[in-house]
Image 1: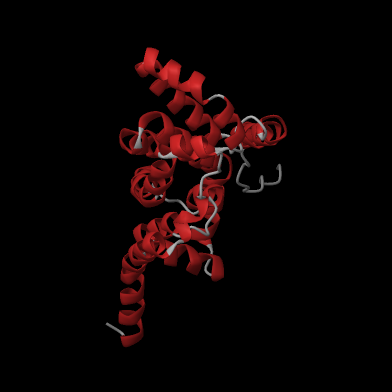
Image 2: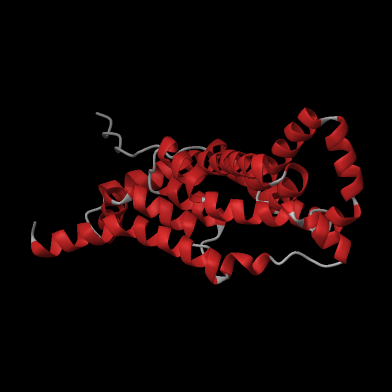
Length: 245
């Protein structure tokens, strides 16, 4: 008789990692080649040509801008902040903020899907099967997904790339990720878009935009208030757990 075959779970092939590898390669190449192109100086030097193209081909300029913004976010290229400023410079605070938020959300969803396809499904399954610390972490995230997702978007200290990858690795549904990304990035996107809308005067004075405005009290305090609201359900759930309710 032949010995019984061992029951092993087949490992996914290299093909599952192709999207992540492509994103990593594109990010490295983009950082090397585009860091001087996607810059404030490039926007300043080409502002008249950009405005002329927008005035002559408004719909095309919107489509090209959104497509480029999606590519910048999806491939983690340098220049996302400059792209946000450009959205305000070309299209004003509104609809520029809407274009910025929509493009950033689509780009983030592409990274999310690549991470889930390459690593997320296996890692989620392992965390769910674990009875130790990993399993408890997964359970805690699952119980507070909405709040946690909003928090990592609202807190300015959380890198955008990290906020795209981590939810994919812990089994967050795509729809929930998209909703919390769209609304979670809205405060910061509106602020930076409004800064971009005022770049005409900044260029005229020969100055650079004040990107630290996000961390001034009139802007930061409302964002921190939103963070507190997002964290409130987590705190209440933890309090009920301690009281045994």
